Image (tube, chains in turn green, red, yellow, blue):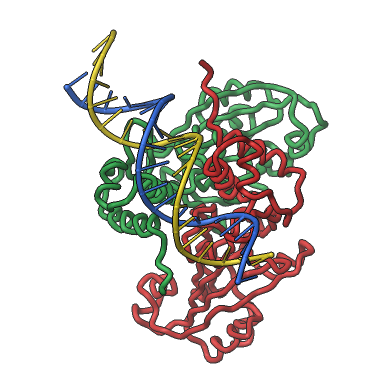
Length: 233
Length: 233
DNA sequence: CAAAATTTGTCCGTATGTATC
DNA sequence: AGATACATACGGACAAATTTT
């Protein structure tokens, strides 16, 4: 009369245990093979694999197979957070891929955050953050228009250097808001995740020492690949 | 020749749009009814509903129906974070349900974090955090053994009061590490989520003004119901 | 470069179990 | 107790992407 856990969960747990001894990049047997091994229908195996994928343990690609995922990267958050410096301190090789830099009239929310009238032109940058060549985050930031800022941002040298080149030597984090959300299709594509996988959304405002807003940004980190650290300065 | 998105996704997006006009607690039509409405198999509707559930928009209960989920709660993180005070400041009614308080030899990790020899007895507390009667988090903390601490924690008045009653009037957050993870079955049960839904894991260390570790805890927040704020002191 | 084999993704249909109302 | 509704599991078929031949 015991209520056994569902078959797919038992399979998922068995695979999870076995995955502990696997290395990132290793390929799992095909669904058909696993179904034969466990003596169940292929759909039942798929259910179990979906659970593992949700857990960020594996990643399936049609035509290819199911691969074991890479372990997480650490990322500190603080008043003086700097992406590159933080990653380098952990011995990783940071990277950045700028997808677009445009100057456009800002949306209502963006203008409000930067404390400028609605419709004011803003510099909008979008791109990906890398660690050891692996995408760990997608950012979208807006800045007030400064001479040469767009060009500097497009060079991909980072926000700190771009602002420095525009005569702003220092800035600090005013606040950060974090929440765990499922990846939407677009984001899943950028972060090489499956739709619905946990993603950490960080909404943040940076300002200069006098409190003037400089950057309002939304970054999404791949939940399974990043740990955010909050530490006192 | 157009590559249409899958049926289940189209249905999910249609339902998502309609859900914008729904109120928390509203019930969706049954799977059979939705299948009939969209002219698809029930499993295709189930796939769409699973996506909505992953997104934290709805919550399905066997036998009952599929209900619309409640909006998120905000929760600040900082050097002097206090759960109750923070929630009260947002106009919500905080609550706490203590599930267990035990004194046991600590695990290796717990002892290391509290800077005591492995195997030292520790006070271990586990429970749920509520906001307006809704579970928003599950915590598990370990403390060094202090006279009367276990009894005070069991009263459910909170960590701050329990420590105060043991002669520790003040403590601060040393650090916090955050990551987005999918809910495992146990956690899903506690937080009333579906297995795999995004959950924010906060691992934190509190210490007294002299730097002596006082509490090492892991809290899991329901991603869809909580926003964590990181602000300078 | 092209075709074939492999592998995952989607969708349908059916049946049964189990929790809720 | 009965009806309703979601959960699990099986089976088959075809499409789409990738890898191999």
